[in-house]
Length: 272
Image: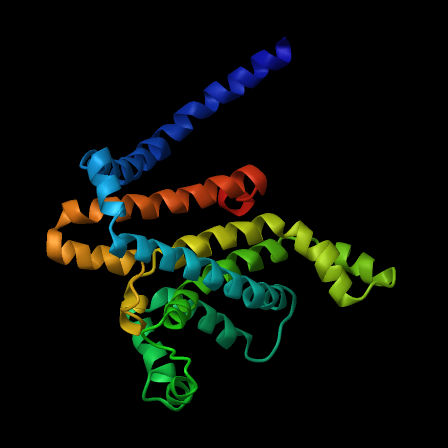
């Protein structure tokens, strides 16, 4: 009983210290909620269903649901090993590598799209060879994946690096001292311990990829994804026209986050 009283006393004593942070945080939270609520309030069930039933909307949804998971998988397969190296090793040129990883987060997405075009555009050596082989790297689903991966991959790299950095290296050293190789140690020790951070990064990467617009518009305006379709609908029909696809995009993102929260027990990084 006394322990409960002491706990309540400590909680009460800390409450005044949290008033100012809570008020400031409440203001930014209100700023998030008000536009969201105002937008959702403009949606009617019939209008949303009718908007999503058009061939253009359904094609955009299919394209986004196809490309975003592929982009996320590519970013994860190649980004997680890079994150591990950055977390565990110091080497010549490491600051440059770190800067390159952060670069897509800094440059505007439209500029990122322009960078991709200068590297793999139709009239570049790489782009022309690919087009001649029947694999166009722009104005195609491949172009969408290239754009999404460029802007979204840093999220999984940065969060996975934080996860690996939080692991006690002595656990890995113990594994190596028992005769297990580096790959076995990485797969069975490091990866499971950093699982929460990696899954959090995957969630952020997917959300960024499926919502990518600027770089995608530059590299592959066609075929349309959900964000580029939303832009076209906005130009032709205003705010009311974008509500169905915008709500669908939001629902997909929230569903992925909820599923990973439920089955993956993810965002330890986010919760921290």
